[in-house]
Image (cartoon, rainbow, N blue to C red; front, top):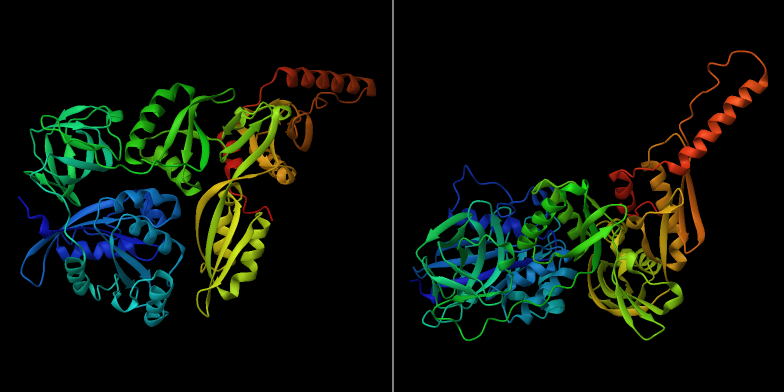
Length: 603
């Protein structure tokens, strides 16, 4: 059995693109747990999407053996975390399985918005924080300036921050020693009844659910009968082990260890992230505190391209939910698209990632509806409703007031871009509540603004306006009154429920015009004229027309009286009229994707 005093559980937290995955790569290389021939960059980012986009989406754990200067070999359990605000739930779960956190700060960028919010999250979990200044090899690196920011902005001791270059490996031996010296060993006793926190899981088609756990008390061995305290399911442990890039089998996991359990769990719904595993024969008296309930902020419906594939999509959603605990979904149906799922996401990037994972990992062909936020509706009879699906929006005559979710947006930017960023936020209905000079070069601005305005292209515009230097973080702060209307999209006079949107009334005309224009380009021409209209109630506010494919019925009419030509044209006109009344327009997937596209070209 391992001595808990020789274990260190820690995670790497930082703003996006400050070098977390590169630092994790150097840790893995220095520990020689991967053969040099098999090593590749972003070693812990094992999804194609992560490698293509250069971002971390999933927290990944790895156990690293390290012999310190005192001659003792320690087990360092490292969790690499995402940096993007949409995956903050992944970060919160990683933090809960650790005692320490390396707070990584880019030597050229300095302290940014996610740096602050991730540090506060770590402090809430009472973690020991070790500030580390990365990318000291960069020409624009300003280590003394970043030390001042750490002291001034974060309230940590900037002089204790360790300078490293994760790319070149500079300063890593000192960092290893600091991890052993600064981070406390795990609390808990191996002699108490077993308690382990499930902080992640994934599905293996041959072995069932692989459960990722942090053992707090007791020990878990193959042959043990384990009880999942939340669901009440009992299973027999087949294998336990550590994460050494590959799964590394071991005889037992004891207090302080981070590892995995295979127990032949085939029922995906049995495993929930945040649940406590205990011994079924000698159970613990109470479960461990789980995670805060995830609160989705963006909603969209997912439907299979072929309605016969609904059952396959359902299985894929269950398996994806196992690996992505922040995904929330319920059954849904649409007149246009059939049966599907209404899903909640933590942001638009999260939505895009889920869409790509369903298509790549589970081979699903899907259609997604336009994203929406959750609105609060107060009816005239005093009833209060929460609506995230336009199809559930009540009759306007019954509505007393409508409210939409607002966020507190924190923007840290160089002084040069302040004017343009204020203009951007005001354009998005933002109200400035705070303006603070962090130092002579950087400013922190806080705005209150509607979440719906941030969903589409705000982050892209923020980065392009500030040339990539501004950073952005937000928290949902509650609901504020709003002028809300339901925008219906009609194709040949028939409303398509999957294209309906809830929008801010003054911006409804612009949104309707954009949607109609995009649909006009996406819908193929028919033998008859197709009218695409945007409507609020019975009022049409925008229209585009897809012109018909014209057959030349006069080709066979050579010479003769003009009345013969008129007769043929009238006959064609009658035929098209009849075809329009019975004809059906098939909306291709491109039509739905056209509406989904970000509004980058709106201005």
